Image: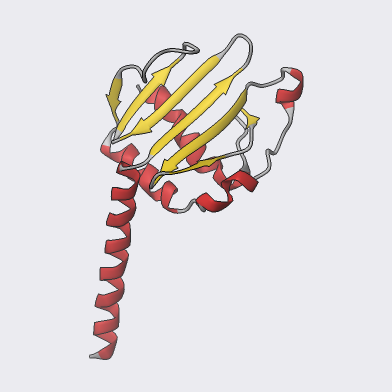
Length: 144
């Protein structure tokens, strides 16, 4: 009986955590920006919508595109694995941006009124600790 109770409690807690993470991501703004002198890309995710801008200093976020349920579920899973307190300590695995070999990129996450920002890294080569999440965010543009 105790074993069954523990299993049910564990399942309930897991489901609650997943729902909490899903709700938290819906109330979170994620912004990926990559740029060089001749290239600009801003991807913003907020409220299950994707905004893409290729124009520097553009007012507003642009047109909203809904994110598919499958992509949203994957984003929620990847987001739940992030340690937001540490993302500003992750080192870039390459430095091509220092000599115009790659665009400079960074990610800003506004979560529960606190802003978390990565160090600058090469577009296409994110920090290893966040690579899956960042690559998913960038891949959403290609799905549109």
